[in-house]
Amino acid sequence: MHRGNRVLSILIVSILLSSQNVSGESAVTLGEKLSLSNEDLGLNGLVADDIGESVVVYGSNGYLRVLNVSNPANQIELIWPGSHTLIDGDFHPRSETALIVGEGGIVLRYAKQDHSVERAAAESSFMFSELTAVSWNTGGSWAYIGSEYGELWRMRVAEDGGAETHSLNSSGDSKIMDIDCHISLMMCVVVSSVDGIGIIERDHTFSWVGGNGYSWTGIECPDGATNFCVAVADNKILASIELDPNDISKSIPEIRSLPDVDAYFVDIDRQYGDRTIISLTPSGLIEHDISINASFPWLENSDIDDLNLTSSSIIGIWSTGANSGWIVTNRGFLFEYKPPMEYSTGLIHLWATISIPLTTLLVILSLILYASPKTRMWFSESFSKKEVDDKKIRSPRRSKKKK
Image (cartoon, rainbow, N blue to C red; front, side):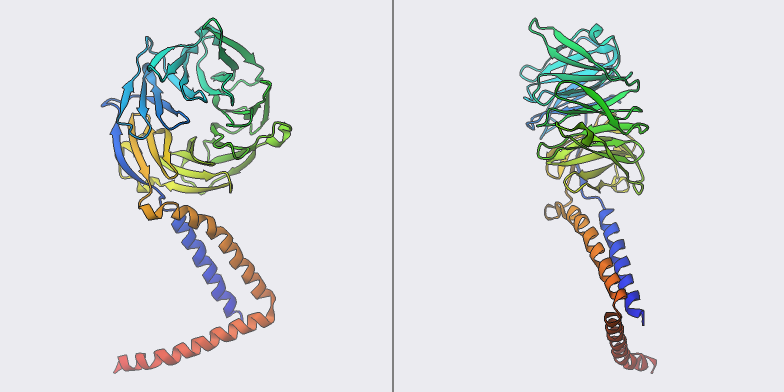
């Protein structure tokens, strides 16, 4: 009587397992590999411009180097008279200059035109604090800077060539982990190690909006076509933040966990359009698509066969296309990632996208079947008839085999 239900249930479970297996495979593979040095460089991060030309990597002992986005073997070492550890950076929206910040209140300005590096502000303007995050606002008129003690400033170049700085009332006391400003909305998002997630509005007003108690590690506002930004916390936590210049109450983070991920979230970077890439430790990548608010495995640690990557920490990635780019590690190793085959570009992403609604449809059909006695009887009788016919076909073969 209920054999039809059992068969359909088996079918649903099979599809669920199949979709899990497909989504668990790496959507990208490693290609070309480079090394910036024979020594461990102690890199802390990278920043890529918005026009796809240059990437600046930075780290311990004042290390600075600019790489070509499409051909990172093309490099220029940047020299400046200092050895401060550099922690974060951001390109101006016009992509001609970048600010790099670090320990001791250091703020450096890199100019792409002549590859010069100079101090952009006096260390005393930031109370000689360790500066941990920097981001230009939407129009590039101000840069927001955060410190290890939760302090926030806004800064711009003054007419006399110096810097104009103002403190923001952050009312927090934990490390500012990251800042990112939306491409088209005059709003920026701040994440801290304990105090949560905050919003900087057009008038430089700062407000905490939620997410306190989580150890946030990164924030990304990837695309001007959507009002959403995505934050990640180390313990497999994602937060979606909607930005509305007219109603900050809409910016309360929507927080969810990805418990099936066997790794911790290190950072989040822009990939392509409204897609982002989450860097993991142990080394791996996850794609998060803001348009559908879903995450997919991209590079599984089990698929990485290079010890230089598995034994290092990913400090950032940059994109060279919809499904390609480069991974950079703290030790100074670079790894290209790309689709395994040309025709497979986006295939796993597409399958993962359609498998969930397909499975939901099958569950609904199962419930309809269970609720309808006539349909259940028809399915059961049809299956029984097919089973009898199959036995008739198989019986002579088994008898013949025994002779």
